Length: 83
Image 1 (cartoon, rainbow, N blue to C red):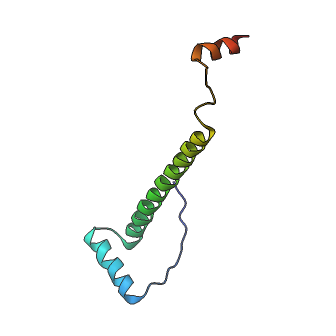
Image 2: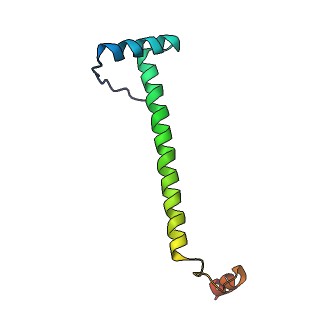
Image 3: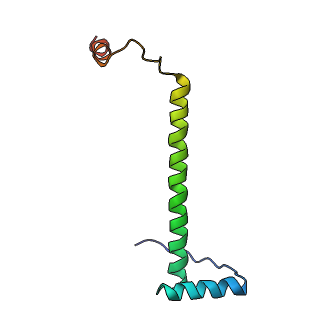
């Protein structure tokens, strides 16, 4: 069972009404509606961070250049490891 934490938020009246309306439309409590929205937003943020890290690794690999293993084959690398 996961632990729950109580947090109190203060919304202006209009936002509070929107939250209540959207939660009712989705057949959810306001808490579960907010949880779902946060998880969706956080999930897309995680994907963005992973994509940025992947793109940085590509940039680093390209900056090193394709000449790093020039004139090397898989077989020659394996032979060197067997020594």
